[in-house]
Length: 516
Image (cartoon, rainbow, N blue to C red; front, top):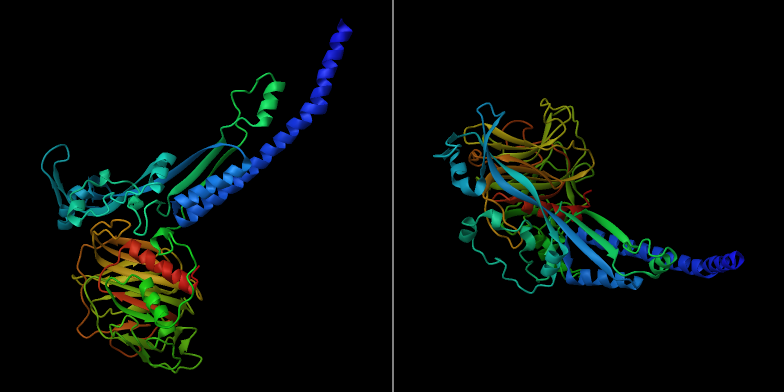
C-alpha cells in the first residue's frame, strides 16, 4: 500500500515538474511582459499629460486602447491634485513681526483698498492696520470619475459666461479649485490642469491571469484572494499649460508662413492688450532687418520708434545677430510714453556683470525724479542685498523708490527675459482663469515672478523725459550710458500685466530666443 501511494505521489510530482511547472513559468513570464508593457504605456501617458497640462478624450482613449494589447482587463484610477490659492489679508502688529489676524480677501477687499479693516463685533472686534495681501495654499483631489465626466462632457455652460459683477458677488469657496475647468474656447472635452499640480495613475489587473489560476491549483487556493499580478503606480508634477496656446486641441503642424502673415503672427504671439510699443531686433526696420539703420522702428505700429545714439555700426556696436549691441557708450531713446500703471519688458544678454567702472547697468528706464526702470546691479554694487541681481525700481508719489529684487545671480553671456509691472491688476476673466483685483509691483526674470504690494501711486518722471534703452535719462555727461550687452526685444504696456500674462509673454520669449 505504501509503495502504491509513493508511486502516485511521484507521478503527481513528475506531472507538476514536467508539465504544469513549465506552463506556469510561461504564463508567469507573460504576466511579466504585460506588466512591462503596462508600465511603459502608463508612464508615457502620464508624462505626456504632465508635459501638456491637459487630458482630452482622444488621449485617454488612446491610452486605454494601448493597455488592451496586454489582453488583460484593468481598473484604472486617475488622480489630479490641484493647488488652490485663496487670497487672504494679513494684519501685522506695528513692528511688522507678528500677525494679528487673517481676513478673507473677498469679504474685505474694499477695506483693504482703504488700508484699514474695522470689525465691529465678535471676538475679533477692533481696527486692523499694516495690511498685507497674501495667499493660502490648499489642495483638492479629483478622481477618475470627475476627470472622465469632464472629457466626455459637451456641456459648455459651466459659468463660462459669468460677468464681472456676478463674479464679484460670488463666494470664491464655491468655485472649483481648478479654475481652468471652465472649458477652453476651442472645444469642450478637455480636462485642464495648472502648472505645479500633481497628476498620477494607478493601474491594476482585475481579471485572473492564467498564471494565477495555475498557482491557485497547485497551492489549493492559498492566494485566491489576491490575484493582482500587474500593479503600476506612476505620477508626477504638471510642467506646462499648453492648453493656453492655439495648439491645444489641433496639433497638426502649421506650415511656415512668410511675409505679412509671419509678421502678424509675431505680434499676435505676445499679449497685445495695452501694448503701446514693441521693438523687435529681427524686424528692426519695421518689416525687415537692416544692419545700419539708426532708428529702431516700433513693430506695434504706434510709432514709438527708438532713436539710436553714438553707435558706430561696426563690430563693436550696432546691429548683430538680430539684436542691438551696446558697449557702455551708446543708448537708444524713446519719446516719453510714461503712464502711472505700466509694464516694461526686455530680452537681453549681458557681456559683463562686474564692470569696475559702474555699480549698476540701467537696462530700460525713464527714472528722472519719477518713473521706473529695470536695473542690473553689478557684482560690485554698493547694495549687498541687490548685488549681482536684477531689480525693478519705481518712484512713488512721496518721492521714495520702491524696489523688487530677483533671487537669481545674473550670469554673463546668458539671455534673460525681464519684466517689470506696477499698478492695478484688474479682476477679469480671460477665458481660462480669474485674476484678483489688487495693486502690486512685480519683477519677472525668465518666468520666475517676485512681487510686493504697491499701495502707492507711481510718480511720473519730469516732463519730457525719454525712455532710455541701455542707460537712464538723467542729465549729465555719460548719464545715459552704462549697458554692456545685446538687446533683442523691448515691450512697453500702458497697464500692469498680471503674473499669468507676464509668464505667457515669457514663454514666447523662451521659445523664440532659446532661453534655458
